[in-house]
Length: 260
Image (cartoon, rainbow, N blue to C red):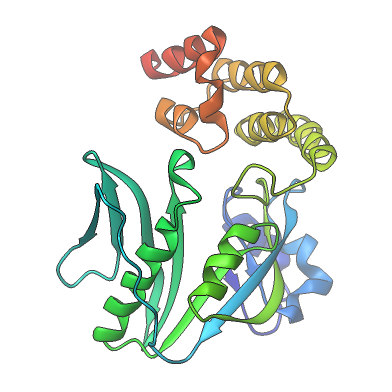
């Protein structure tokens, strides 16, 4: 959700139209009134970085043995597979009038091998072949890994800004200080008394704070309170997947899957 231009007068109606789970990007003009425009009081500021590059001169990188680069037709998205499993991908998050924004993901077990860089380079090439002339890369300010990939691909920092969300401002282990993760866990647990699914983010924060038992309790509470999300969202989340070794977590996931 983008809030552009000058703020409207009826901020209450706007807040009611924004979903609690939306990721809100306000222009600077909105910051003096942003709290009145947000849908709930548990949204927090996410520091972010935007990178840009103007020319399509991305370097190409060799794909490691036993890995396969997957480029599908006219799509700008590129994946890398290993043993028939997608382990890294670069997706175009926005593509408007020759402008495209790119995002990358790599399975935690395959990080540190340069796969994100390979996939992103191929995706940028695909985009350039299809008429994209302005390239952008966004990530959390805490995500130094993503920033290193962007720099390696020739992107430069364009600006730093804030967005707002009722979620964790991180994408990898170690992005945030443990003390801050603990603070966020307690904050989202408080919020879960009003918005049930905030226990999902409480569980994520407890996991990142190296408190797996508290994370499992948050997941159990989430399911018991009638959360309607998918069990796969718990099992496959980049932080929560480490909880799969706990029987109580598995039981909670099973209960969610068997619920209506």
